[in-house]
Amino acid sequence: MLAKLHLTGEAYAYGGYPLRYVHEVLNARSEYQPPGSPRDLKVCAEDATWLCVAIVRNPLDRAVSSYIHTMSSSILARLFLELNAACVSRVSNCQKEATFAEFANALTVRSQNGNRSKGDGHFMPQALSGYMRGVLYLPVEMFSFAANDSSCPALAEVDARLDPMHLAQHELAAGAAPNAEHYKVKALTSMPGSEQWPFPRIDAAVKAHTVPAYDSFWSNTTFCRHVISCLYGADLAMYVRACSQPALRQCGVYRDACDRQLARLREVCGLDLAGWQRPRV
Image 1 (cartoon, rainbow, N blue to C red):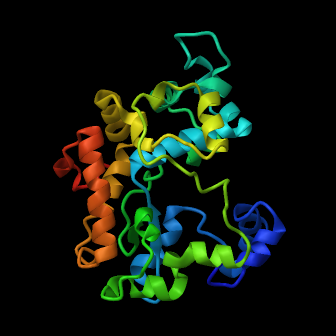
Image 2 (image 1 turned 45 degrees about the vertical axis):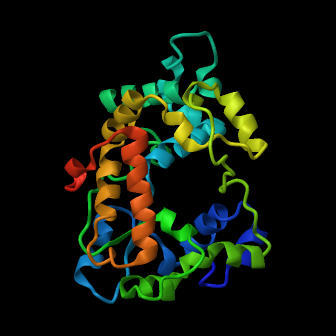
């Protein structure tokens, strides 16, 4: 959206690209204020002049990314109180050193005790509002494809209004790339077992641009099924449904991305996705 408004350079110069500018400047303008709650998106189902898009991510990646982002932020880690007791097998400062497996243990406790805190959106399920009529759900993975799919009328309006396929080029032109804070450089393949690495080891890999492949965090299929189909079950249901929109299945860029990601969920996590075609939220 910044790129389409020709604000990428201004946002980058402002500092803290992109969120600081969006939160402090763009969202202060009435025409760009985000919805305060899912109820505010009712207009999407009632007014065809609106284009409402929800971008979703494979829970396999979002879970690991949420762990890295939360542990990288001392503020977020402190807010996630359940982390205090997550490292039961060793003596450590769990809010600084938790492994991904221990982070998942803390998520399990929070899902059982019902606690909530500021910053939950960074690590709790994002699909609690359910699947909304009138909203176009797009997997973020499709935006990594270099070219637009000109044969896809369902995506033509998205491309015309936002041009998401060329975000990297817009950032590069504005001097905003590489944005190391938000783009993690991951290994293509890694030895399994990354879920047992203490966070300082993960953090060192992030800073060295050698983050283990996210699939290496899921070497235990029982653990994977618990996290993905239980803790992030609502997100999984939304993602599978987002990849099952008939109007978009004709679009090569969408279909290819979805087929790859759904195959990962089956192969990495051993999930039978047939039961997730209908949302469980």
